[in-house]
Length: 350
Image (cartoon, rainbow, N blue to C red; front, side, top):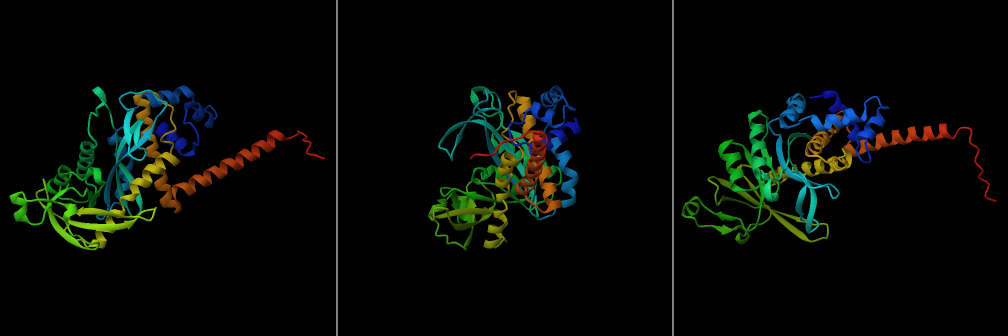
């Protein structure tokens, strides 16, 4: 692995505010690093989770605590003008109500004391007939297992509703003896006692008379241990009332403790936004699978750099980008004054 080039390229992704091309990076270095060298770097390297762990491990070991959490989620990077391949394909976008073309990325973050550290990065690959070679839940389980094998200290696994399957719950609590908090759909089948669970007597969550602030222990269909179920009520942006059912495998947590812990899941949303806005995730014109995957890896590594700088400077990613943009603007202003030297402009509009 060419560590120097990865460091340079990831720095460039933080500074970049347009297409992240090899030509632009070469120009940034004053052609000290050639366009061809950058292109070869992106085309020949093989970045994976093992390298990501190697890069973040020294920092994580200094920060990790028993109350850390693992957060799993996937994000979509649009590529409307890129040809389809095993990485670039069509996915249904629920926010737009239609299919869009792009790359789907599955990540697992470690969050502790407001700092997010990417532990796993998998680009979803599609094989024959456009089907994913590995489902997102399968990748999610592998990533959690890898964190366990790496002996990462954490208390909870958090994810959105798409990852609250019985298989995921059984893996986390039944096999790894860790706890989780997952939201559940209202049609999820539950039993209100161990006896009903053994007899197969289940009812949908929507039929329960569960009040906000209340808790009830239930058995989910397909899960061999009880979980604590709560109902969270919130107000949407349009003023309407929404509700969310959360299942927690720790039966001792209070209602408010469960809510507070699950709110930490928002860190992964901030991670996705920062990748797109601050580390040029969607700015690469790369066409091949290898260069596309390596660019994404470098973008995630650039996010990690911003997290380390955030801790040092006590400033968020956007504030640091603003500082960098201001410095660049000042340098550009000084340069234009130099270029204008000796030019007489007539500004008399009378």
